[in-house]
Picture 1: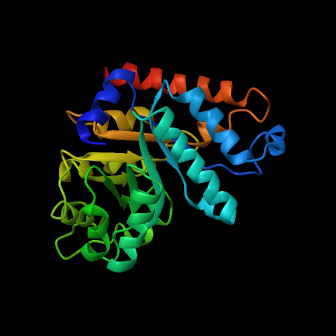
Picture 2: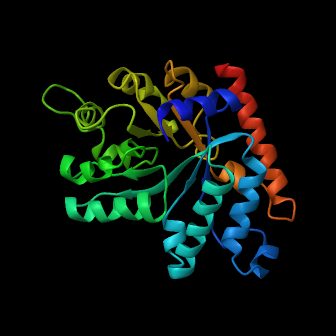
Amino acid sequence: MDKAALVAQIEKKRSVLCVGLDTDLNKIPPHLLKESDPIFAFNKAIIDATADYAVAYKPNIAFYESYGVKGWQSLEKTINYLNESYPEVFTIADAKRGDIGNTSKMYADAFFNAFEFDSVTVAPYMGVDSVSPFLAYDGKWVILLALTSNQGAFDFQFIKDENGVALFENVVRKAQEWATPDQLMFVLGATKTEYLEQVRAAAPESFFLVPGVGAQGGSLKDVLEKATNKDYGVLVNSTRGIIYQSNGEDFAAAAGQAARELQEEMSAILF
């Protein structure tokens, strides 16, 4: 998916909502456990209930690989369902991969060819040769970790160089030498909104994937006021605040209602 198609979806739905699919068998409604594939049954219902309001979906790969072969099969069914039933939405493999070049090439093949995701999250710690294999695919995106929403972000991401520039800002600036804003996005945590304007200044044309709104305490209003650009420039992820609204048979309807409320809030601020 290219940037123009993504922007078109944002304008059509008046939304920058990304729904996280961190599906946990311990949290899904008990009646789904009777299904032959409870994870996919849950995902399919969530997707169908929220697709009018979401422009992107983000399965967290750890929640699938933790179940071994069955989990990978559930992931494959999920991405196939998205690609076949909602080809207009942007798909993100939240895998946070990062390794030496030949290993990164295999990871890229897995998520871009075998699973046919539009994008994958990548860790920048090992530098350009670990990231560039992901950038070799036309129409695919790298979403690079820059400023994350967890407390441990302060361990390394805020270390300053001799010029007083923090590591996260150096990552954003350096990575733009590797790819254009038509192929490279950055992860920016919504719980660190005081830095969003700083990162936007460093990457004025890039899209940001912004987790941390809602259950983690991030402010949607702050994100949309500080991080957007002329192309909207953000995908705001919500997971627990949408997919686990109910543990009963109304779980999908409850998720749809939560997604609609977020979309309406986004629309009021952006459009």
